Amino acid sequence: MKRIMKLVAHDNIAIAFEAIQAGDALRFEDQTLVALDDIPFGHKVAMADIPDRGTVFRYGVPIGHALHDIPKGSHVHSHNLATNFLDHQSHVVEPTPHAVESASPAVEPTPPAAEPTPPAVEPTP
Amino acid sequence: MNPVSHPASAARPQNGSMGAPQDAPQGDPLGISQNGPLGAPQNGARKHALQGYLRADGRKGIRNHVSVVYLVECAHHVAREITWPYRHAGAHLIGFPGCFSNEYAAMMMERLCLHPNVGAVLLVSLGCECFQREPLQEKIRESGRPLETIVIQQNGGTLRSIEDGQRWVADQLAVLSKAPKVDMALSELVIGTTCGGSDSLSGVTANPVVGLAFDRLVDDGAAVMFEELGELIGCDEHMAERAVSPGLADEIRGAMDKTRAYYQHFGHGNIGDGNVEGGLTTIEEKSIGAYTKSGSRPIVGMIKPGDVPEHGGLYLMDMIPDGPVKFGLPDVNDTAEIVEMVACGCHLILFTTGRGSVVGSALAPVIKICSNPETYRNMEGDMDINAGAIIDEVKAPADVADALYQQVLATAAGEHTKSEALGHQEFLLWYKSMEPIGPACLPLRQAM
Image (cartoon, rainbow over all chains, first blue to last red; front, side, top):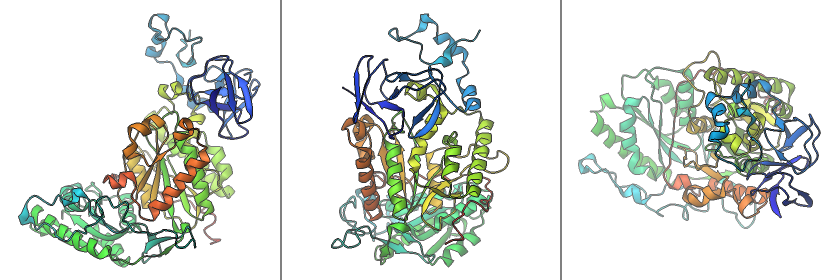
């Protein structure tokens, strides 16, 4: 049973207190669920089904909206969660030439990564 | 707090001709166990009552420091040499390095010299700086504090100024050590919070723990404050909703607009690769992690550096300069922010860190709350509270918050924090342009 923590009762995400692998059983207080993805230490896991455009709550307050349906047990991060403060986020996640380069497989340092986590490094055509 | 000596304070000035002070108080080496039961429970009665040093303005201090104040960088060395042998005995070094006058800096110097933890003030002037010392002297005299001014150019230069200054400081420490104390309620405490060297766990462990402790202190009637507006971007509306009046809500929105404009000027990104790797996805998520330090109580006012709260409750301190961008970044480091909260009368500071900041502060003790269990193990000598225990030992945040609350009481009662016992006295004051707060910033003021 992997440890997670939800800080406020109506949050729909919890924080991984240890590295989680897909299929791991998770429990916080009386809530149990199964991880659908690998979730690194300190990252977020969905504690409920979050609908497309639905608000993600951490500390009881909105931290952004879902980019598509997020099933309970999923890793919640840049691939499925976006800011509600687009103007601020946009200038920060602009890909730098270095970041674009690092997205190429030749310099990819972590082969087991199932999916490209930071969408910020996606080269734009 | 009784001024205490420390092994290091035995290190008298090397040159015997400088008149090494002989009367520095002696006592428990670290002053932790023998600071006296200043606020200790007395037969279970009024278990939260403290004792403090009553000042003429009605405020009470939890320390009785002699403040040695340089009025320009050119007097810094002399002031530091005066302070050094007594730095563990209650002498604290502060000052303003600029030669040219600045309204904000002059106001800050006044607030710091009149801080309730200050019992006596030694001003050290070179003599030709532009800083106007007369108004400052006048305010200090009015406050009833013992005051001495050494003008180096009129006092025979460096050596004699150090000698005279050390003699005065030693005399004052001896007097202050016998100063009577009066009852002090928790509602008379003013406490600030900041974070530095944050990591991905800061918003999970240490910051929420401070928030819980803040709630309890507010319920006790204390005044508490948070700041760092640059790290509250995205929390605008949530903060506005917590404001006790619509006018205050608008003032908060205005301050956040100012903050965005100010940081935009410097081209600051608010969330970096390290944050994303650590599991933070959005700017509002990062901000909200810092924001959790503020707890859940209503925001009763917005103040600016140097404004002293007149009643209890949770305050937001707006430290972003007003007007066109001038003099550089709003606050260049954590210490600059702490100094601004100390100028607001904060008796002590709750400082959260994940990477492991070691700083303390002049005049006000700093309680260090470590978010990361590994950092805590590596730097236990610097950390007062291990909030990483929430992860490591599966402790409830409420339990760690209770330990922090007890630490606040112990610190207010005179027990040294880790940074205090280690002699940390970080201090930084620089130029700024600040306008007074707007009329709607303190809606409860007239009701008082």
